[in-house]
Image (tube, rainbow, N blue to C red; front, side):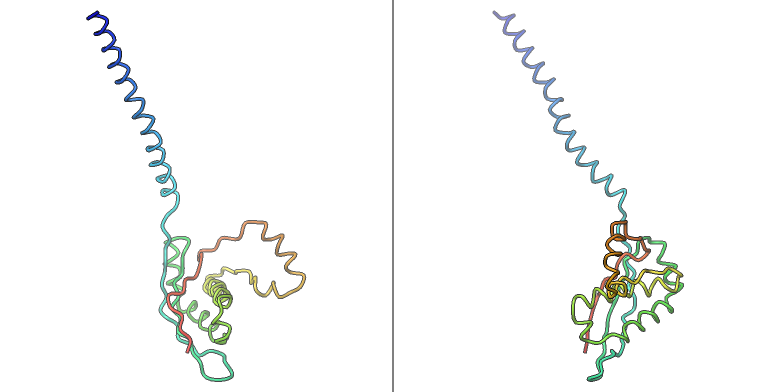
Length: 174
């Protein structure tokens, strides 16, 4: 009876100890997989690079009165190395952005659609001095036959530009 109890107890201890590492591996594997999955994702994706520009102050093209806009813009760049190239062309880029802003009216800039259009135009004008031409989607949308052609083009992957987006840090119209 004593030998049977010792063998049974030893077997129970052995089973529990052998099961415990398996449980730890089973529990550890998802934790390790969960830990490694974000690490892979983080290694692939780098944090965005932002380049703030000095604020723009410009008279607007309103005919009913003198109005002006003060707009602070930050460019989201695709690559941190592109920052130096933008700095080299900064006077021409600022000039182009000012020219676009000076053509706008307060009514155009007050709507969300107007701000989104302005952001696309800023990207186009910021890339132009560097010899990168961005297709003017807004002009093409005005043509009646263009939307059908555009839908075919939109099936393709959109082109990748060094400036990913324009962020407005402040937007004041007076």
